Structures are given as C-alpha cells and as structure tokens.
Image (cartoon, rainbow, N blue to C red; front, top):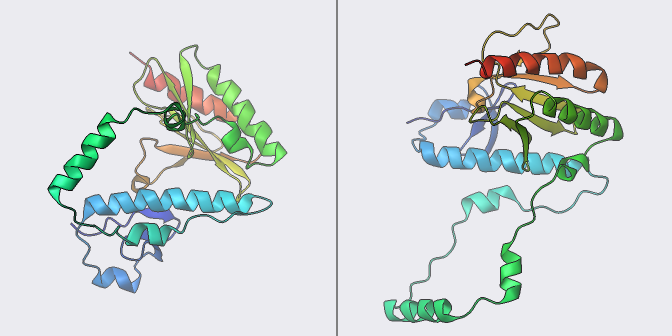
Length: 232
C-alpha cells in the first residue's frame, strides 16, 4: 500500500522515507515505493509528537537540548545473541529478586496536569484556556477532563469518546479548539473550519482563538455540538 500522504500543515505532507515533511506533489512522491502502512503510522505519530516537543521547546525563554528524532527512528538496537540456558538463568534470577521500595516508587509516573500546558503560554493565553476550560465543564455535570502532553480533552458520561480537545499553540499565540459537531452547527461568523480527514482524528471541526473575547461564541458552538451528540 503506497504512502497515505498525511497532511502535517497546509501544503506539507509527511514522508515516511525522509522522516519529515515535503511539499505536496514533490518529486520524491513520484518515485516513492513505500508499502508499509503500519510502520508509516508509527513514524507519523512519533514525528508529530516530536514536532510538538520542538515547538514547545522553542517557545521557552531558554530552550533545552532534546533528543534527536531521526536517530531514534532510524537506528535499530544491536541484537546480541546469548545461549538459551544463560538467558533462562538470568530470567529466573530476576524473577526471584524481590522488588525494592525504590523501584516501586520509580514505576509510579506522575500524572500530567494542566500546568504542563500553561507553563508554555503567555498570560493572556493562560486566561483564555482556563476560561474555556471552566465554560466547557459547565456544559454538563457529567463532563470530565483528561489531560495528556498533546491536548486537554473533555468527554461526558453520556458518550464514549472525547467531544472536544484544547490544543495550545504557543508559537502561533493561539488556542485551537477541536470538536465533534455531531450534526449541523449554526456558525454565523464562520469561525469553525472543517478538519481534513488526513489529520486522523475523530474531531471534524476546529476554531482558533487568541483572546478571551471569542469564548462565548466558541462555547455556543460547543453547546450545539454537545446537544447533537447527546440526542437520544
């Protein structure tokens, strides 16, 4: 199966061979013989995660050194053959060894909070995302918040999947609100735009805002979407 040409940004698509972006209809696309869709998907999500980390890093006052994506993706670990008897003995020793309290503590990973996203934002964007958060939670008592490194998600006890994602875009000085419309949405100002299917997300519309003054309008769109999705 050929490369699916996933869109990364306008006029840019992901190239699994180059592990980066190329222009649409780039010469390499004409000679591409890629035929590994599962590997492509793995590399694409790894690349997008890396891209978000790079953007967030550049937004800091003092950027830090981060791992290089290309080396991680291209270099395979060296496989060392060992006698089966030796491997079996090492496994038995490891299983018999009691786990120390320190090892148990190290296995417990701290949960990600909203501060992870706030620390990358200016004061006005912090206010915007916090007010959006409060208004979304007011839509229904059954709405709960889930936070990961990519977005702040919201879903309801009345539905199985997320119905809205908040994504911080510090380099563009915007907050992107992605949501599932669930049907027709009245949007007289035309702020919401369709999300390309190549984005591989259940959300089908998005709107970007840079200040709190548009929050009431955005919430009106989300309220319509939520009502569409929860209709029995």
